[in-house]
Image (cartoon, rainbow, N blue to C red; front, side):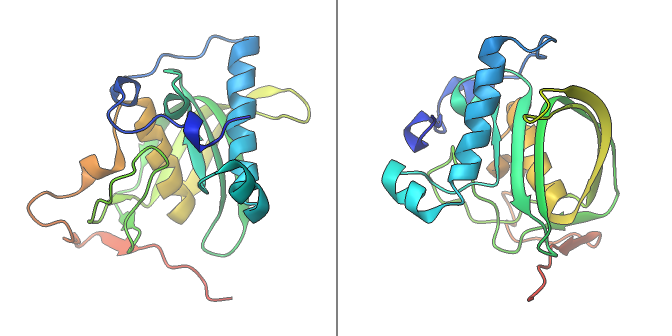
Length: 192
Protein backbone atom coordinates (compact mmCIF):
# COMPACT_ATOMS: atom_id res chain seq x y z
CA UNK A 1 0.00 0.00 0.00
CA UNK A 2 1.24 3.46 -0.89
CA UNK A 3 0.73 6.31 1.56
CA UNK A 4 1.54 9.97 1.08
CA UNK A 5 5.04 9.21 2.39
CA UNK A 6 5.60 7.03 -0.71
CA UNK A 7 4.91 9.96 -3.04
CA UNK A 8 8.15 11.42 -4.43
CA UNK A 9 8.37 15.16 -3.73
CA UNK A 10 9.59 18.02 -5.92
CA UNK A 11 13.37 18.16 -6.00
CA UNK A 12 13.78 14.42 -6.59
CA UNK A 13 15.46 13.91 -9.97
CA UNK A 14 13.01 11.17 -11.05
CA UNK A 15 10.35 13.90 -11.46
CA UNK A 16 12.54 15.54 -14.12
CA UNK A 17 13.36 12.30 -15.94
CA UNK A 18 11.92 11.32 -19.31
CA UNK A 19 10.33 7.96 -18.66
CA UNK A 20 11.02 4.72 -20.49
CA UNK A 21 8.41 2.64 -22.27
CA UNK A 22 6.98 -0.21 -20.25
CA UNK A 23 7.96 -3.63 -21.60
CA UNK A 24 4.98 -5.79 -22.56
CA UNK A 25 3.81 -8.13 -21.13
CA UNK A 26 3.75 -6.30 -17.81
CA UNK A 27 6.29 -7.54 -15.33
CA UNK A 28 5.13 -8.47 -11.84
CA UNK A 29 6.85 -5.30 -10.55
CA UNK A 30 5.06 -3.05 -13.06
CA UNK A 31 1.72 -4.66 -12.21
CA UNK A 32 2.38 -4.03 -8.50
CA UNK A 33 3.19 -0.35 -9.13
CA UNK A 34 0.00 0.11 -11.18
CA UNK A 35 -2.04 -1.69 -8.54
CA UNK A 36 -0.66 0.38 -5.66
CA UNK A 37 -1.11 3.64 -7.62
CA UNK A 38 -4.71 2.66 -8.38
CA UNK A 39 -5.36 1.74 -4.74
CA UNK A 40 -3.87 5.04 -3.52
CA UNK A 41 -6.30 7.05 -5.65
CA UNK A 42 -9.27 4.88 -4.70
CA UNK A 43 -8.38 5.10 -1.00
CA UNK A 44 -7.92 8.88 -1.26
CA UNK A 45 -11.67 9.22 -1.93
CA UNK A 46 -12.38 7.77 1.52
CA UNK A 47 -12.09 10.37 4.31
CA UNK A 48 -11.54 7.73 7.00
CA UNK A 49 -8.72 6.05 5.08
CA UNK A 50 -7.15 9.47 4.36
CA UNK A 51 -7.12 10.23 8.07
CA UNK A 52 -5.99 6.72 9.12
CA UNK A 53 -3.12 6.44 6.62
CA UNK A 54 -2.26 10.11 6.08
CA UNK A 55 -3.30 10.18 2.44
CA UNK A 56 -3.57 13.39 0.45
CA UNK A 57 -6.49 13.15 -2.00
CA UNK A 58 -5.66 12.98 -5.69
CA UNK A 59 -7.30 12.48 -9.09
CA UNK A 60 -4.25 11.17 -10.93
CA UNK A 61 -0.92 9.55 -10.26
CA UNK A 62 2.01 8.84 -12.58
CA UNK A 63 4.74 6.26 -12.00
CA UNK A 64 7.55 8.83 -11.50
CA UNK A 65 5.59 10.11 -8.49
CA UNK A 66 6.29 6.79 -6.79
CA UNK A 67 9.91 6.69 -7.96
CA UNK A 68 9.43 4.60 -11.12
CA UNK A 69 10.60 6.23 -14.38
CA UNK A 70 8.21 4.30 -16.63
CA UNK A 71 5.27 5.42 -18.77
CA UNK A 72 2.38 4.42 -16.53
CA UNK A 73 -0.39 6.55 -15.04
CA UNK A 74 -3.76 6.21 -13.35
CA UNK A 75 -6.67 8.66 -13.48
CA UNK A 76 -9.64 8.46 -11.13
CA UNK A 77 -11.72 11.65 -11.34
CA UNK A 78 -15.15 13.15 -11.78
CA UNK A 79 -15.63 15.41 -14.80
CA UNK A 80 -17.56 18.70 -15.03
CA UNK A 81 -20.88 16.87 -15.30
CA UNK A 82 -20.21 14.60 -12.33
CA UNK A 83 -19.41 11.52 -14.43
CA UNK A 84 -16.69 9.26 -13.02
CA UNK A 85 -13.63 8.41 -15.14
CA UNK A 86 -11.14 5.66 -14.32
CA UNK A 87 -8.18 4.92 -16.57
CA UNK A 88 -5.07 2.81 -16.05
CA UNK A 89 -2.77 3.74 -18.93
CA UNK A 90 0.51 2.22 -20.09
CA UNK A 91 2.78 3.84 -22.70
CA UNK A 92 0.34 6.64 -23.57
CA UNK A 93 1.20 8.87 -26.52
CA UNK A 94 -0.63 12.07 -27.48
CA UNK A 95 -1.53 11.88 -31.18
CA UNK A 96 -3.56 15.08 -31.55
CA UNK A 97 -4.64 18.14 -29.60
CA UNK A 98 -7.15 20.94 -30.00
CA UNK A 99 -6.20 24.52 -30.75
CA UNK A 100 -8.63 25.60 -28.03
CA UNK A 101 -7.17 25.73 -24.56
CA UNK A 102 -8.69 25.38 -21.13
CA UNK A 103 -7.60 25.92 -17.54
CA UNK A 104 -8.68 25.54 -13.94
CA UNK A 105 -9.53 28.92 -12.43
CA UNK A 106 -8.04 27.82 -9.11
CA UNK A 107 -4.82 26.64 -10.76
CA UNK A 108 -3.47 23.11 -10.42
CA UNK A 109 -1.98 21.18 -7.54
CA UNK A 110 0.12 18.05 -7.40
CA UNK A 111 0.74 15.29 -4.87
CA UNK A 112 4.48 15.71 -5.53
CA UNK A 113 4.53 19.49 -5.06
CA UNK A 114 4.16 20.82 -1.53
CA UNK A 115 4.90 24.46 -2.36
CA UNK A 116 1.99 26.69 -3.38
CA UNK A 117 2.33 27.99 -6.95
CA UNK A 118 -0.07 30.72 -8.09
CA UNK A 119 -0.97 31.06 -11.73
CA UNK A 120 -2.97 29.54 -14.54
CA UNK A 121 -1.91 26.49 -16.50
CA UNK A 122 -3.37 26.50 -20.01
CA UNK A 123 -3.81 23.06 -21.50
CA UNK A 124 -5.43 21.69 -24.64
CA UNK A 125 -9.19 21.48 -24.27
CA UNK A 126 -9.21 18.13 -26.10
CA UNK A 127 -6.52 15.50 -26.55
CA UNK A 128 -6.48 12.21 -28.43
CA UNK A 129 -4.23 9.50 -27.03
CA UNK A 130 -3.01 6.15 -28.31
CA UNK A 131 -2.34 3.93 -25.30
CA UNK A 132 -2.52 0.53 -23.71
CA UNK A 133 -5.41 0.40 -21.23
CA UNK A 134 -5.15 -2.03 -18.31
CA UNK A 135 -8.26 -3.62 -16.80
CA UNK A 136 -7.75 -4.97 -13.27
CA UNK A 137 -10.88 -7.14 -13.42
CA UNK A 138 -9.95 -9.05 -16.58
CA UNK A 139 -6.19 -8.56 -16.43
CA UNK A 140 -6.33 -7.47 -20.09
CA UNK A 141 -4.01 -4.85 -21.57
CA UNK A 142 -5.69 -3.52 -24.72
CA UNK A 143 -4.45 -0.94 -27.23
CA UNK A 144 -6.97 1.87 -27.63
CA UNK A 145 -7.31 5.39 -28.91
CA UNK A 146 -8.99 7.57 -26.29
CA UNK A 147 -10.28 11.12 -26.51
CA UNK A 148 -10.30 13.31 -23.42
CA UNK A 149 -11.96 16.71 -23.07
CA UNK A 150 -12.35 19.42 -20.46
CA UNK A 151 -11.35 18.53 -16.92
CA UNK A 152 -10.31 14.96 -17.76
CA UNK A 153 -8.08 16.33 -20.55
CA UNK A 154 -6.47 18.63 -17.97
CA UNK A 155 -5.91 15.73 -15.56
CA UNK A 156 -4.48 13.54 -18.31
CA UNK A 157 -2.07 16.26 -19.53
CA UNK A 158 -0.95 16.95 -15.95
CA UNK A 159 -0.11 13.26 -15.44
CA UNK A 160 1.39 12.91 -18.93
CA UNK A 161 3.74 15.79 -18.11
CA UNK A 162 5.19 13.64 -15.32
CA UNK A 163 6.18 11.07 -17.95
CA UNK A 164 8.25 13.66 -19.84
CA UNK A 165 9.87 15.27 -16.81
CA UNK A 166 7.62 18.32 -16.46
CA UNK A 167 5.68 19.71 -13.52
CA UNK A 168 2.54 21.82 -13.71
CA UNK A 169 4.20 25.04 -12.60
CA UNK A 170 6.54 24.89 -15.62
CA UNK A 171 3.51 26.04 -17.66
CA UNK A 172 2.79 29.20 -15.62
CA UNK A 173 3.58 32.41 -17.52
CA UNK A 174 6.40 33.87 -15.41
CA UNK A 175 5.75 37.47 -16.55
CA UNK A 176 1.95 37.34 -16.18
CA UNK A 177 0.82 34.27 -14.15
CA UNK A 178 -2.90 34.98 -14.62
CA UNK A 179 -2.78 35.78 -18.34
CA UNK A 180 -5.62 34.22 -20.34
CA UNK A 181 -5.06 33.78 -24.10
CA UNK A 182 -8.03 34.47 -26.40
CA UNK A 183 -8.35 30.77 -27.26
CA UNK A 184 -8.55 29.65 -23.61
CA UNK A 185 -11.72 29.24 -21.51
CA UNK A 186 -12.00 27.85 -17.98
CA UNK A 187 -13.29 24.40 -17.09
CA UNK A 188 -16.78 24.97 -15.67
CA UNK A 189 -18.20 22.44 -13.25
CA UNK A 190 -21.99 22.00 -13.13
CA UNK A 191 -23.67 23.12 -9.94
CA UNK A 192 -25.90 20.02 -9.72
